[in-house]
Length: 350
Image (cartoon, rainbow, N blue to C red; front, side, top):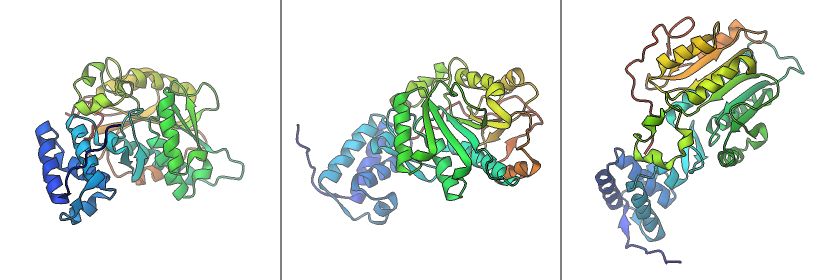
């Protein structure tokens, strides 16, 4: 094996200047953040530490690792893949090329899911023997949605009241999801299943969450170069971006429990298409679109006819847990047009 070439010692400030200049020249729009994250990772410290100690020495293997990482980032590889981790919902997740890198906007799915769950669990007394809420994360990828839900419910003392499943068509992606569940000590609380969307059998679901591919096929190749490192199957949503989502929505009438809810992440410019989809496949259902933190349409919420377990108190709990407004409408948005949103990028990170 070729020995590692160790460059002479330098300082944090000098290496950041070198890295920022190198990455700006390569076209990175987040050159400073990239360089800071990579240097902190190479040194085994957090970003705040290197910012607080610009005079600190960088030498040996740490310096060689950092400069190699700069080469990889300059070639377009995402920072998350270089570091092997990505922060999501306040948690650190292992990431690699088996699955899509989690995006900040997907945290909105988790927030809304937790509001639904908490609302239902606290809406009325749950006598001993009451079946747990059945929840599934469809197309789980790295497992970020289901693991974030499990960790939060454990913290709130509610994990024993739910039955959590996660599915993916790709066994390799499920392997990564299991690793993340183990890392956060919730592997025993989640059942991981290889499936094309929903599992074939079992009782209906109380809550379905999904971040399925929603980028139109023709737009995938136009995404930033970082996206070329990610599995195309996790990005490509077919001709209109809704091919996979449409298949899942078509299953909801048969697979969602009375009063159940589905939360599906969508592209910011897909309001009109999702409106038509809901009217066509879910007549009589309640539905709406919630915004992400940037104020863009992001999560389509579909709700079947109310059943015994759904009460006004649950609705109040869900509403009070939400910080962001929705696209208004009785059975969907009052306007089916796009809101001038950006192209359907999945929130590509550096």
